Each structure stands twice: as C-alpha cells, then as structure tokens.
Image (tube, rainbow, N blue to C red; front, top):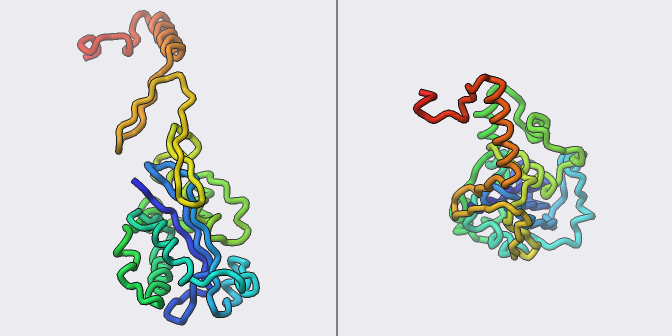
Length: 245
C-alpha cells in the first residue's frame, strides 16, 4: 500500500474567505515503512498572511514573495499524491484548502476525492482514545514520539512526525529497515540490500518473515532445556500437543 502523510500551512483558517495554501509537506509510506521519498513546497499565496496564522507557523509574506504560485506546482503535487491513500490529521481542513486551490485553477476533476482515498488520523485517534486530547502534540507524548523540534508548525516537519505517530498508533515501527525503499526528491526509489545472515521471505502484500539464526535457535533450545530441568520435566514447550491436552 502506498500512503502519503500530508500536511499544509495556510494564510488563515477559511478558504471560503479567500485564504490560501503557503506550504505543502508530504512523506511517502509504502507497506507501513517510511521510504524517504518526500514532496515539499513553499507557495506564494498572492495575498497577506493573517497575524494569528503567522504566529503558528512563522512563515511571513516577505519570505514567500519569490516562491512559485500554486498553479506552477499543481501538476507536480498532484502527480506525487495521485492514487495514494492520504493520511492527514484533521483531514477536512487540508483537503478543503487543496480542493479550493484546484477550484481556482478550474481543476475540479482533480479534487482529492477523485484521485485519492483519505484516512483522518484525528478521527482514528478519537476512536482509540475517547475523551482525551488527540492533537498531534498529545499523540506524540502518548506514543513517545520526539517532537522537540516543533516550536512552530511546519508542513514537512509535521508530516514527518505524523508518519511516525500513525505507524505507532496502528501497531508498527519506523526504525527497522528490511530491504524496502530509499527515496529521492524526484520521486524515484532504489532498492536496498538486506545485510542479514537470516533467511527473509517476502511476498507482495504480506509481512516480511525473518527466521531465527542457528545461534538464536541454539540459545532458545538451551533455555527451554533449562526450564524443563528445573520444573522436573514439565516444560510445556517441549511436550507434544497430545501431552499438553
């Protein structure tokens, strides 16, 4: 499964009031593993940024003055996300802004619902942790995700943090790399070799199975024999199924 963890920063809170996207950050995840393939773009919104919004993300109108407008980056952005499942925290906010930008370009056919599926991690978190705070900072604390660099909001930083948080929330890990993908900013991927003496079975759409090494098997059997000796021959892991029943 290809998922894109996505976040945006904007000039304000309401696209219906003419507010625009100023930053897009995307992190690619394939088969629950962060690949290193990212999309990141600052955007000139062609309007001023609300003071309250700038206090949140720290991005100024002056900083964006020489950045491309959304029309100039739309094709590359849509190419990056097309066909993926978007994973977004409070998805209606970001999706609403993306669709508004596409409407301004008369590209309603490319609205998010037409080219991607969407998973809202805020909805997921509320189901998993009812009655608790479920903003991104609260989830980082709950799942022991390092967000110490998040003094200000930033689309790419927040997408990277959300990627770790989402995988932790759904029972996986992000640090173990087993011959998956390494990404480049142009969207290409290169295979990584597995430097591991153990046999690894990989089937499309299934979990990787790593078999124990001979050394690990010897240690395991030694521990079982020790348990068996100390229990007077009652180690259930060394008994036949019929004996246990």
